[in-house]
Image 1 (cartoon, helix red, strand yellow):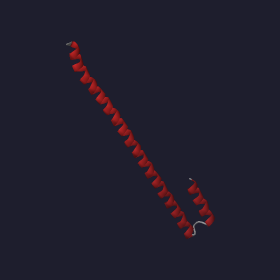
Image 2 (cartoon, one colour):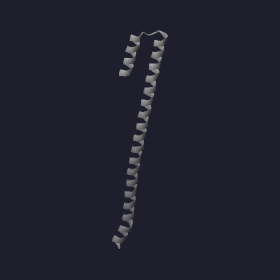
Image 3 (cartoon, rainbow, N blue to C red):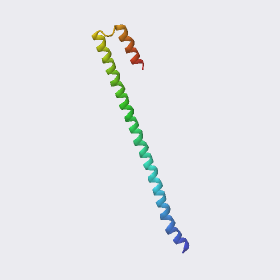
Image 4 (cartoon, one colour):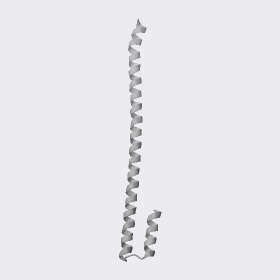
Length: 85
């Protein structure tokens, strides 16, 4: 009789603990994947912003060249410096 009571109480408790552990592990995996995808998205935005900044800077340099504020040699040096960074 004692064994029956023991198994009737222990098995559901053990199953519940295993369920809680499994669900916690799965939530952790899902959060990790979500965080990874957000990081990738942030890197893509940073790349886009840096390319926009680069093109803006090149356009400004071109405008300075066209207006005569820069010589062709100064423009080439500044452009090379921008593209190397």
